[in-house]
Amino acid sequence: MRDINAFHIASADDVLTGKTTDIYFERTLRILKKRGIDSRVVAEVRAKELPLNHPWAVFAGLEYVLSMFDRLRLNITLDALDEGTIFGAGDVVLSIAGRYADFCVYETPLLGFLCQASGIATAAARCRKAAGNRELLSFGARRMHPCLAPMIDRNACIGGADGISVVASAEMLGLGPSGTMPHALILLLGDTVTATRAFREVIGKKVKCVSLIDTLGDEKFEALRVARALGKELYGVRVDTPKSRRGDLRAILSEMRWELDLNGFKHVRIYVSGGLDEGQITSLNPWADGYGVGTRISNAPVVDFSLDIVEIEGSQIAKRGKEAGAKKLVRCPQCFSRRNAPLHVTLSRCACGGVMKNIHKRFISQGRAGVKIPSVTQIRAHTLRELRRVEL
Image (tube, rainbow, N blue to C red; front, side, top):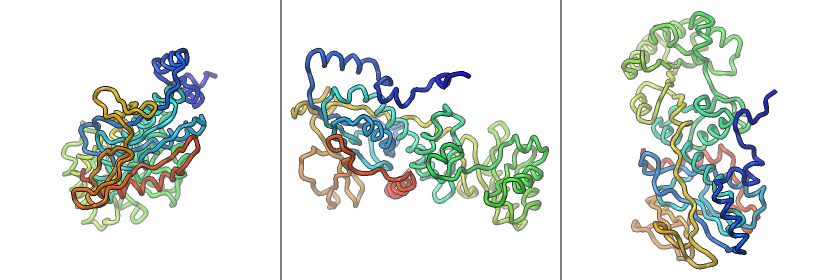
């Protein structure tokens, strides 16, 4: 039997022993030790720009960072935003204070955790914002390395997805997996109605029966056939028509909704999947009741965070293009405006009259865990509250 490394994945031990670092951090550590340099520093994480020039992003991946440092037992202090918090370009999202030699080889995995998790959460949040109150499911695991599926689905949930499709992800997150049926089922059984009846009979009534209606025939007529055959037992229909056959998807959905309603099937929901993004979701909202989004979430562009030293042994210093000195991110609860502020400066009033509030929390204090990370469901609720304050 082949070793698990046939999948070309690093283990948790590889991360914790510093093997997933960029080599120049390892070489830097050797030089510092050889020269007897063991300086205390403050380092900050922020992104100069956001993906696709979006005005906001969602902070995620903190649980991975805290889990790493909890196992390492390093004598550091770490402040950060709560996961699920909205931030903007240039905002300081996390800061570390401690001896640089203790954590320098962990910069690579730290940034990797935050960059990809925040990118996925942001993409999901934009789809969530576009979909409004309609159902949003994460269907993107097949587009990425399978070992990443639980990470993708966790951060899709943080961004606001209502459900995930992968069994392992659901088990890890304590959620029930969501899904309908593949085209393969209809092809193997030879008919959409036959396949939908088999789904209902075999899978049972605890799972909502959503029929995939574009495998063999016209979407409108297949939807009507299934609705007439199953009646109230049919929860919904899904359209996943490939782009090569799609035509005007808005017109297709409008026609489906009209015919279903006209024939007494107003209870039947319409779900759409297949290459969707937030723009397409917005355009389909008048007729769709829910969406399955894959690649847009799982293959989301990362948030390009960097980590930079801003203080050494109490002296404020930073490389060119960066602002020296430890900072906090302050935000007005009234108008939601944000800005970085020097760490020890007294909070001031916002231009709107509101009192600016420091939204960093201390998660590690001199090596000891502080604030406990909430559950995925709690983080998702926090994200949804944040999303009410921003526009798409």
